[in-house]
Image (cartoon, rainbow over all chains, first blue to last red; front, side, top):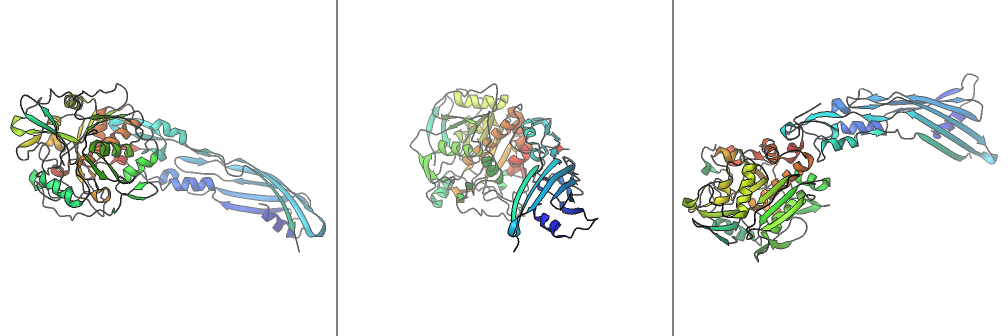
Length: 179
Length: 344
């Protein structure tokens, strides 16, 4: 995020150029986690593969967009949102981004910048599956990704995803020298 | 190599023998021991002696395993299921596995499960094999010269590994002939009563389970035919794949025409080339370990339910020229047995 500060500062300020799109990103670490699960080798008791794609594939990836609105030549506010994403058994909540940027020019070409951003929402959660193990185990609630594991089905529920997004709070302090 | 621990009954002379406790110093010795036992039945993977077998149409593959250990603890002779079980770190808790075998005699032989070459008795080999599969089960080791009834538990799955037979004259066999042998009677009663999963090595004479060779038969195996919670385990040459199918090892007893045996018969790979150990003695412990893993996942399951799950989820796709009269229900598939029938 701070790398894009230089681009913002370098652009000549016109009366109407107060807001800049500074980040567009598709996907995230949480998106990647879900995508990996879509390719897990889980099988049924007859040895045929379980198709994980309907549960862990998504029609679109979580898209994050962030803007910087200049308050004055030295300060700005970050704001943005993420769309979230979802498959049959998981969900990444939409999120909001808010932050603050301060840039100070020092002597002899040095610049120091401080930025902080907060992310709200964007959490990854997961729903369990209902599995029928037949006579040996009956119908049980189980983590879809672990239906064939060695763990008792009830214990697999402890591994259901409940994860915060990366970078819920970022603090960035930089010094730059132009020469 | 036969280990003779003599047990006498009023009706017959019985000899408890370890099933193929063959010294593995050289392949010739192993083969010589197998041939000396009168094995060879139908020969190779065809097993025509069982009757009703189809003409083989698939060429069996060969093991690609050249040593017991590859790297990082992965043991080449293991099936994928055993590899996964070994690395899972949560296998067999809350279950009990009893081995009745030779632990105390001077009859030792060498082999390698991938943990270095060792020389030990038949019982230490079979029990250590299961410990690789299900390390967290509770183990009981009983030497087969100790004529003591096994005890079982009210809570937790009980498994018995019987990699041995009670060989006697065929004409003297009758149901109940082993009633005066406390250990064997307790095993037989447990199998018929569903109180323990009994993983029984099928035998190494290349005959149908329940058959005779040179006028002798396995009284223990015969007594278990028809029991609810027994699994007879034969040996494949190696752990096959869809592209490299495995055949029944030439020495392994096979299911035969008896439907009770067919429906309670599984095969697993026993890779002599990698470990120096061969015989259905080393097939049964794998199934014993699988049963323990199932028991630790499905804690409310009965022994009979565990047996039925292993039998019902066996695969035939990695066996060359699969036939029920040879391979029974097929190759044990732990990952299949752990998996759901349906899920949504």
